[in-house]
Length: 149
Image (cartoon, rainbow, N blue to C red; front, side, top):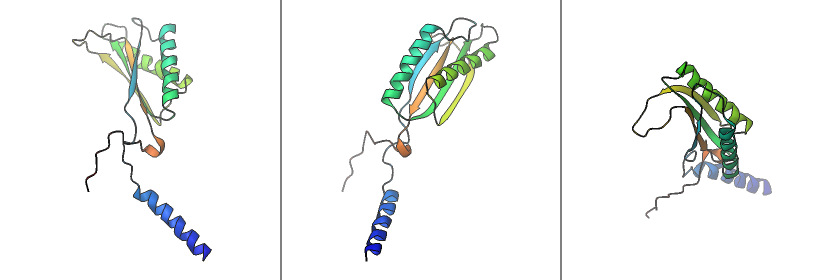
């Protein structure tokens, strides 16, 4: 009798887990920081390294799970070996993030030659995007739609 009861309870718990579908997204919105560089350089300055370190620490405090790390290294077209420079910048920032233990389940980077826009931004930078994750890829639904009966 006790064995049947325990079996029934175990099956109920197993089946209820499948019935409780994730109501939220699989990860949270991305957080980002731009790391800037001197002309023709892929060396991260001490100022930018300090900023990246502080930002990484903040990410760790706020989000214990990192789902995705995506970097876009940029170089301006007039910089020496611009495409390779953009890629080296991204590689160096990815290495620094690794030292700060910012590693995602999915991580990648690319280099790109910057095309100036109307905002006047510098193309000598790496755009760092980090998407925090949630346990079992199921974040709480922060904007639930009220269910009608």
